Image 1 (cartoon, rainbow, N blue to C red):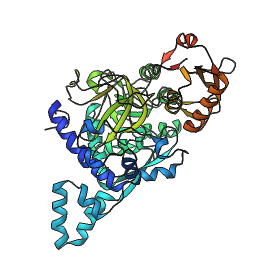
Image 2 (image 1 turned 30 degrees about the horizontal axis):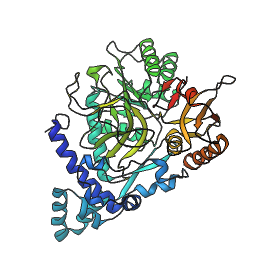
Image 3 (image 1 turned 90 degrees about the horizontal axis):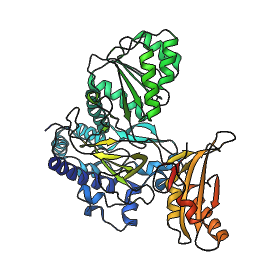
Length: 463
């Protein structure tokens, strides 16, 4: 059955099977995950379903590399060669390879390398940048998923893509393989508006992909440069746009003289991931990001505690990539907040795939006035375990005098305020690698009155 037409039970059976295969491959080939399963006291062989995987504690970048060292992320790359291939390769692939082994050893070696050797890397990350690895077989997955993406946004082989994204990024790779998988022409001029204008003049795009935050400004620059955009039908905002970014892009698209049926759609690769999700054209961008159930297992956890959240509720996105053998993502905390994971058929395109509704990219990692990134999950984890605090709040906002972003932590101690504050500051520094802008002692009732645009129950975003 087609990837986007699986019923609930069929999807569950498929994902359970893929989870078993992925956990076996990861536990046997990843240095980090070997140690991780040992540390939590749970044999990898005991994880045989998606539900059981959901009970494994989720991890993120700082769990693998506490110091933010990109080189440490190599611990996620699977290693093994022939032994690992024999353990995790799909049955048909393994049987075909074994037939080659007896007669054509070079062909057998090529098949093993295709499944086990990391050959390509793309840059990604949330709190810091690091490369994520793909095998030759993973690139085939990228191409298949890319062809699906092209279909979801309503594009065909007759469309032409100009992608204003960073070279070497996972978004660049995903869009490259999307065009390749769909058989559509594509140009990747980078993000400089002058270079994008030159590419768009040379090959007028019907699909323009650009970073969500930069798309409106890019369209204005192209319009002012006199670049003809009459054929442009799809503006793809890469990075899950905010409401303001989407509105600005729609305004700029209308002023740029695009085609009458031109539309703005969102696309997103979660930090650490490799596959690009998008909104369907039929919904006009209103039905959420469509995932790939045979390659993505999407779940949510409570952003403050990391505990599994109730299905269908808001929480932090946790991604497990299935059938990919480069860098291993199991129960990966992406730092994105989702309003819900909707598994009902899309009312617009009728695809039966889990869709991420109300996603806010990177909401749980924020820049501070020092221009360093502070992981709010680390702050919450440090505060939630302290018995000397009756309650706490984290308030994110801009400083009145200069508009620079700051993070203020309010605590309500149960005992000596000085000891509690010093202890909380030490725990935050140890967990997050830095201190917030301010640590303020407050009464319990004062904390209850703090208001703002809530990220979670105790983390508030003040504009």
